[in-house]
Image (tube, rainbow, N blue to C red):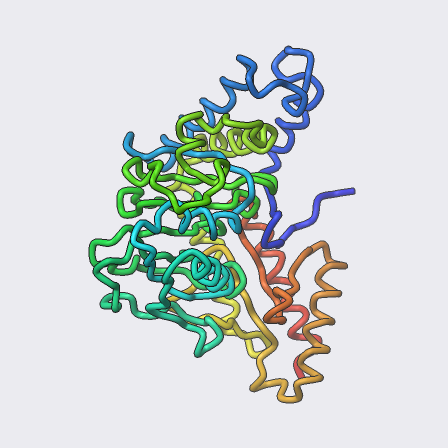
Length: 370
């Protein structure tokens, strides 16, 4: 069977070159006679894998020496608790709510202290990023939290918020390594790797060293302290060895293909193909305000101004998802909380995949527009 174009929001598409390399290594990694999945995490062989992965990520993102790189389990959602447990020294934090994942992180933080929503785009179904130039950030807030790219709603911060000197914490899960970032503007970046970098089951956390202390909230489990993992170089317990190995291959792939500048250029080119079509289509309509659009996640719907009957609109969207799947375009159904359609066009999605999607949409529009 030939490979499909996979528009899943995560677990998501990986570079074919990386998959083939992993396939070649699967039974016998570099002549050691075993798979990475079988080797000890304390072995010299795996020590080289994890150290090389970290070094390559540092090179890719230009991570300063005073930041620790941690390979952690639990995914992005575990960070919703881990962040306040480790950083809420004054038990106060300010959250910018731009979608479901920021909202969940905010709700989790309320368990541990006084979490305050200082901005939200819930009034327009999270279809935009609010103006964050002058927010009511509290003087004694421990940090300001954002989800920088919103997977479900397809929005992204075009400009980082003015945190008024407070530590910025960012969930970058669905934009991680898609473009250059200035790590020094953040106190902590975390990203579940299953969207843009590797298989599910791991999160990368990049934490400024001064934020890693023993001074965590009372009752914080040993495994949920950044210091535990920082002191042990992510090897306090058995890490997700296979995932670290695959991520390491992806880091090398990106370094070989122009780094994050190259990734950004390719992503902008791909996204323009889809957004340009949506902006000129009669049947389909993008759901995000232009200044807040993500390069990674593109939600769209059948235009309710054209198909005014809600049942007919829903039926047409269901038909689109069914027929697109038959055409080899997988996972275009929107998130269950919002409906419609969504194309996730991460780093590993080739431009040809986006062009194939647009050609299918044109054909579908011609056949279904009354």
